[in-house]
Amino acid sequence: MKQKLALAFGLAAIIIGMTYGARSLRADDSHKVMMCHVTGNSTKAHVINIDWSAVQTHLAHGDTIIDPTQAQGLKAGDPCDPTMFLK
Figure (cartoon, rainbow, N blue to C red):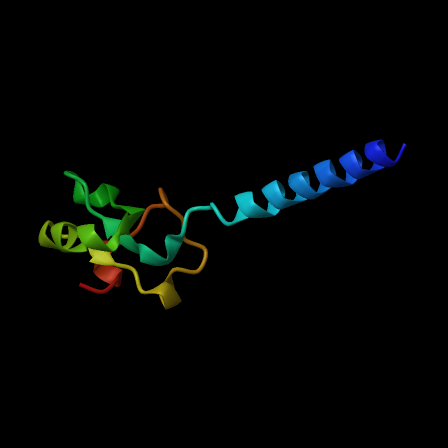
């Protein structure tokens, strides 16, 4: 009986540890930048989230950085107006 109880507690501890450990494996968005991405047809610009390392390339072809204070409610894929954001 004691062995079964110890085994049950040990298993519970492992499951709880794995559950909380998995939460720390989520993607970290602190290195992401929200941009208004201009496509070949500039009237079809939309919001994208990119890594900081790609910002200069996107700025070079007309994309604009979306200021986080202006980003409330915006998510990737939403339409945007590149003239309204930072260059």
